[in-house]
Image (cartoon, rainbow, N blue to C red; front, side, top):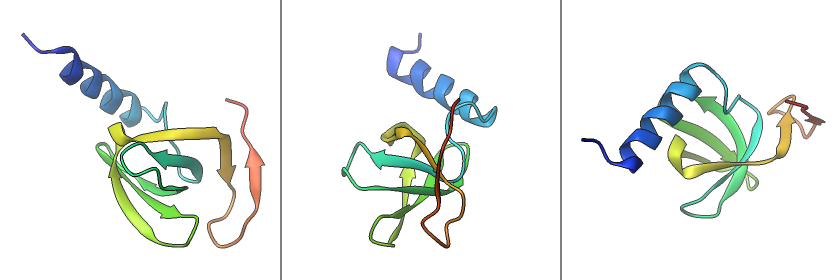
Length: 85
């Protein structure tokens, strides 16, 4: 029998495959390091995030949290739009 943690991770991956959780440009924070940034690319298991300082890092989907439903309209500038999901 699978434990709750494994079931939760599988459900999270399934939701991400259906694009129900994170989209490119979303403001996120790593729950592991506390680093904040915007999603550059999102896969089934991990995401590539560009931090506020401009550094790029990779984080597992299970370790990132959304911040305030904000989304960058362009990663090349600082345009931010409010997204009502």
